[in-house]
Length: 125
Image 1 (cartoon, rainbow, N blue to C red):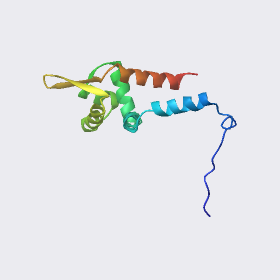
Image 2 (tube, rainbow, N blue to C red):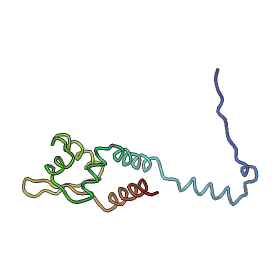
Image 3 (cartoon, rainbow, N blue to C red):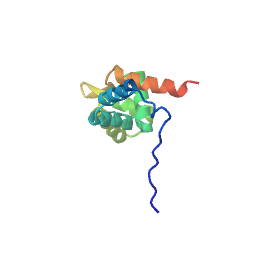
Image 4 (cartoon, rainbow, N blue to C red):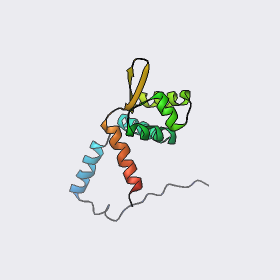
């Protein structure tokens, strides 16, 4: 038995003014494009992994070398390197090489702000 989609109408749809129709048309025109939406979804996907969230939180405190990240997160160097590579490709973290040691930090203040705002939202009562 095939179900038909139910189209819900709100009470003001029948009484829509030209101004509200123009506002909706403008909103539709200004909506982010598919490429931007996809890029934003990829960022949220990167932030959707608990290991990466913990790694980002550690880097929010200070710049760390791979060894220190391994110690803080209690992970192998291989596992940490895998996560760092993913986060580098997403431009969430950036490396800084000093001799043979590579230090990682958050890419820029936008990443820090996204993380802090999300954390604040979750802890807000």
